[in-house]
Length: 99
Image (cartoon, rainbow, N blue to C red; front, side):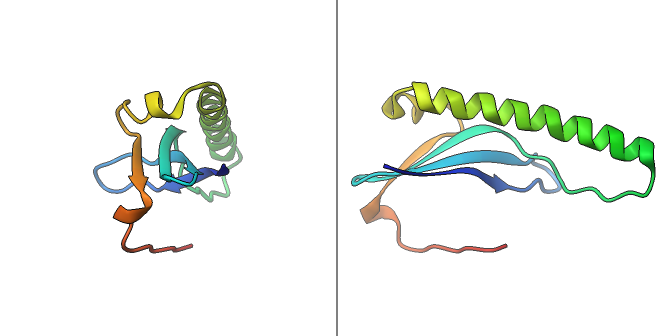
């Protein structure tokens, strides 16, 4: 099984950002939500930097906890939870990768 952690869908106007683990096996691709995702924030203000760093640390901790759950859980059970899915290889017809 191959695995990519910290795959991010950034936040938009309406939805919040999410972080996923992607797990590939012979049958298909599991997409498992592992936590929230933060936005990159640049500011010259030291207090604002401190606050942003604390928020990003909290997000990283939640994602690490989510990734540990993936390690310990049965993937078939995880895909039944909201926000998770399984795509059989035959159903994947297009891929798009962006930076």
